[in-house]
Image 1 (cartoon, helix red, strand yellow):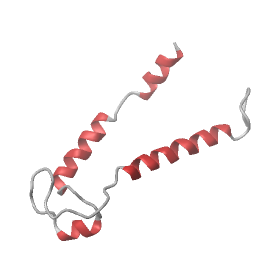
Image 2 (cartoon, rainbow, N blue to C red):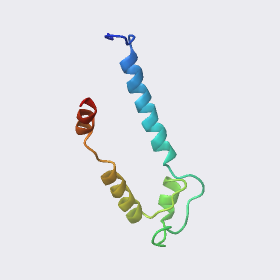
Image 3 (cartoon, one colour):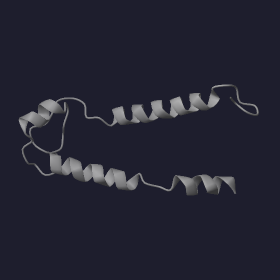
Length: 88
């Protein structure tokens, strides 16, 4: 049930669009192309099993873990504070 000027289902449409955008962003960050035999960052060998499991892999497990941790730390922000500041 929509209120005000919004039509029925408008909120769900917005949620669906947000989810689709997030999925597209995640897919765009997946590696593409041929896997490397050595890590781009540190030069260590990338195991054959990893190269087969993750097509287009460019980093060893350790370097990928560090990159993932950096990304997760930089993506954290206080959504509630952000929303509150918009209401003022």
